Length: 443
Image (tube, rainbow, N blue to C red; front, side, top):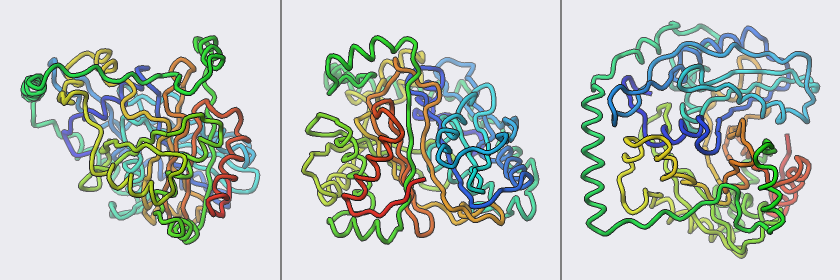
């Protein structure tokens, strides 16, 4: 985050979800090692993160219409060590619990935690509010803390000056709230008049928060009967596959590594009992022109048919990446930043939500392959949904997060209250991947 940066429309959307206006989302990086990681090493990483680009919080503007701004915040949740050991087969259940008490506005928005596994290894989790960073940004923040390509000093060999980042980011915003408000209102007024010249925009299509499309009457009643009290049960699975095998399987079907990934998530949803003949997939697009820790993304979408091959999805995705989802009726997106949060939520509710989410985070830097002297036998990135309740279920049923590190593709899959048990999700992942020619191992 550059000094003095103001919040973006996407930042504000995720800040509203933190406040209960939408689906709660936290991003999580997971490192699995074959041996125990020393506490002192993790304390050094924690110290580097505290003064790094995740060490910031949102500040409300004093002038109506001005955007929120960012301020350095070296406060952090303590490094958390879980007592005893946990079963390796339950590590994702442990990881699901690491997203509580993240506050990008009034308190620390990230947490570093670790647990010893009963197989002799360790699991390390870095979780942050989505208001602070998107998936790629979380990777960049970790790369910085571990002394990767964006840093000059490794926290293991010698810490950078502890106040270096905070000094840089403490610079005051050169643009005052009054100037920023004037800019925002000018864009909104001009853009709104421009949109209205083409007629009154149509009302945005309704996106059901309880995923009513495709549900039977009995299922709808079941959700309605419990949504006021029940928390939603989300399950995750992580699978790994040699990169050469993944790419060979994709090429054999006329696709790419990315289109095979999308195919896998769609086929898993159909195998779980999804009744629709088509599946709508939302595809995040990294829009950053330079490495920076930000929510620098846009969304696009494709519609997948049951007969689509990885080759067909490859072509659909190629076309989709050339266009982006836009605000309804051509209205300026800055409108969402000058009106009250509840109005903005009503206008943008369900934006970007489709039946599945397929987020390709890309290749991870080499710095993430190890934690000090410890080689990582698995590295994964995903989103989790702390505090999700049945009355806030999104349309999205399955989310997939693909990344590559060294010679391995890692895919984290999250089911949002659609699949009954973790065992069912594991079976679906294994059977679908095998049918696509992917030799996988599961965490």
